Amino acid sequence: MSKPEFVYVIYIASTPEKVFTALTDAKMSEQYWAGNRVVSDWKIGAAFALKLKREETDVTGKVLEYDPPRRLAYSFHPQHGGMEAEPPSRVTFEIEQQKDQVRLTIVHDGFEPGSKAFEGISRGWPFVLSSLKSYLEVGKVLRAHWYEDEQQGAA
Amino acid sequence: MPKPEFIYVTYIETAAEKLWEALTSSEFSKRYWFDTELKTDWKVGSPFALVMNGTTRDVGEVLEFDRPRRLSYTFRHVLSEEARKERPTKVLFVLEPHGKLVKLTLTHEDFEPGSKLLDGISKGWPAILASLKTMLETGTALSIPPAALAIEGFQ
Image (cartoon, rainbow over all chains, first blue to last red; front, side, top):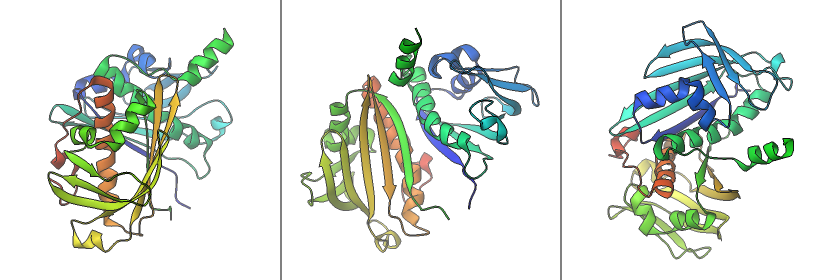
């Protein structure tokens, strides 16, 4: 059985610098990533955290590559829902300029067969990257009803 | 070995009816789909063709037309002799409204093992769907340079 791997390509009318900044800035990520924040000082080997708005624990990891505005990679290890028992996976972003647009390729790999984290990220990335695109092109993020409903329920 | 197929999910801030119109009308497809026209009357069983700048590139037949939820057609590339020999593949669009968003899921499947077409469409669909999303959200489609896709025979 082959190892699960998630690959997604999206084109964004923006610049490599803006896309790279959006991927690495806590305040910007909070906007398009449904309230979640990427936090790191982005030195190679330094800690990376995705602070999840709706969980007690962060996704933890380490910065593996930081080559603005072309490549970014970090390890990715959710600490909730049983996924803490799985080995960390790896997220790699590649940014290429195409005329007045950017091609953003994300590869999320390093999962064991049957990984629960893989299921989660396969559903999550298309939404996060769709929202990132809207955020950079329209200045407006996508609001997902399933998050809004949760917030109303919690209030 | 995983089944050769291509699946892409994107979220678009629009109405399902508008997205349906964009997926089925040449007036829109010419704007976001590399100047491609959709030649068909959309009756189930009717012939279907994708005509780019006057050249028929792909042909098939309408399998499902369930406005504004499910659209499906067979798909065979006819420009290269190699691709012409491959069996017809199947394209399915599923539209699911979620509040102000529509979740669009594209599944392109039934490829022969080692299909040449699979490589081409895997590069093509992300660009077409990114341009479609931008057109519906901003009013202007992306103009992605065809050469940027690095698809053999598509410049």
